[in-house]
Image 1: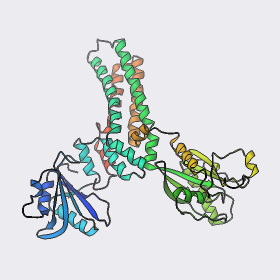
Image 2: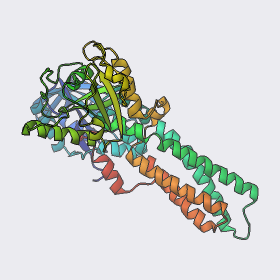
Image 3: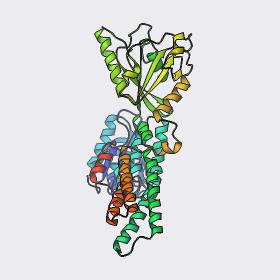
Image 4: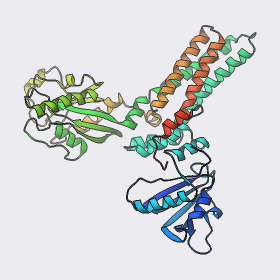
Length: 457
């Protein structure tokens, strides 16, 4: 990867469409555009003579042969996404014509971009920090409005504004410690020591608050898996259809209709949730049904939440328990179905009462079920603040190392340990928190982050 190259790529999704956008960026972007673009009309200027943020109408041509009629937009650096001279070409969205236009651009001196290279240049050129660069990918891949809103907040610098004061506190303490290392004959005044300890305490608390948003961040980005398990005819397939708002699973009064797992995604208050409908749990000599039951147990073990469904119109039956099936998962939620029918009296003495009672036929209790699912998945009701920050696994790792080093530095300062050791831990903490926003990076880290981006970003 050469940062001085002029790069180009299709920035819109592959496949047929009304329009496609091809992006060119680099020091020769305008020269490349001049070579392949012919403006309409005799008096319209070439792209290199056009002011920034101007749209030109014309054609992409190969020698004198027109390839496609396009709109070309000029963005002169630093007033562009990459802070380099950038050209965006809107052409027709057919795969063939898009490929021809890109091939012509590449033949005029640009090279094909690598995944995420446009966003990487925006980061390297100081337009955005690393959390904002990651937010670009989060925004593109967001599957719910809440995830999109959280990504937009991070793109606007929400997490960066949380990281900056944390790093400032650590830098302030480090500067004081290193100043005393330069003048070893002067001890740190008790009042100064107390103030530094207070700053480290505040930094630790701030760091922990950010770490507490990791669970929300994981759910918003990756979603959750919820396994619907229970005895045959409890209403698992009916509940799946109700959650999805469509008839996805076959519903039948015949026990054992579901023989395999069915997975579909729905949004629960902004959280993307993969619901897994499973075969009814019972002893079966049918080898096909037995395999489906084995897969039910496996789905429950891998789920973030096991939703155990019981039939309230029938007596509680002693048998394979959904809770037993979900022993490998973190949480379970007991739901009683068919509350619109007369309840079997045995449920009054049942040890395991449903948390939520619903009717898949009438929809009764469905809003309460969605609220219970949301609360269990988020382990409570998160604030809008935590959803807006929602750190990812990379941030979590860096902040965990920051917190550990800060704790060590504070303990060493309290115990009067050599300031050299205090300074060492503070440097580790400052470097770790700097990784979050990209103030301390390596090529391997940048490669790992931007390799997951699409070519046009």
